[in-house]
Length: 98
Image (tube, helix red, strand yellow):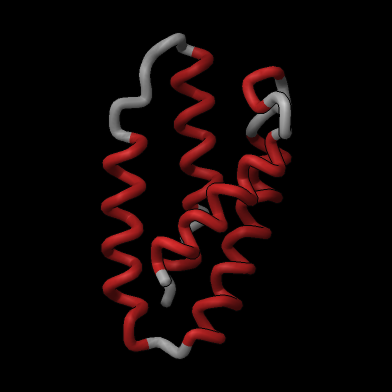
């Protein structure tokens, strides 16, 4: 349950944006995300679904707060914006874990 609180959507975009600024590819982004989803999905298999939902809401909100402070909302996130991108990845991670 504690590993689910890792702000993975923020870390996803922080790494992706950092690589974009350095004009490099993000080679470990997909693999790291898949490994995270598999591990957390396996570990949260025995937890009640309403607890998993609440923890994922907390994780999503903390990811948005961290993104507001550490990731600038520039043209990289257009046309939807930084906050939508973080929420979208949070939903993808939730669906992958469930």
